[in-house]
Length: 66
Image (cartoon, rainbow, N blue to C red; front, side, top):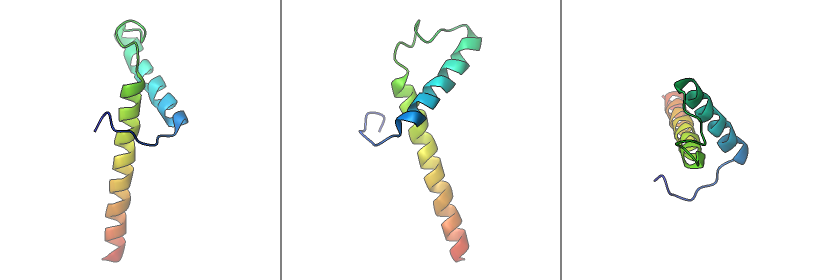
């Protein structure tokens, strides 16, 4: 799942990388120290959000049919 090749909007991946950096900084961890490449983490966040949005839409669609 994590290594699947999928289409992601690059701007969303960059946003997620920034989010991960913001979380790490207050913990005293600089992104370039322990996590040299946050792209995989950022892609995972983007994928997670996309799945949740898809699930939400499917549930709303089912509710509208009832």
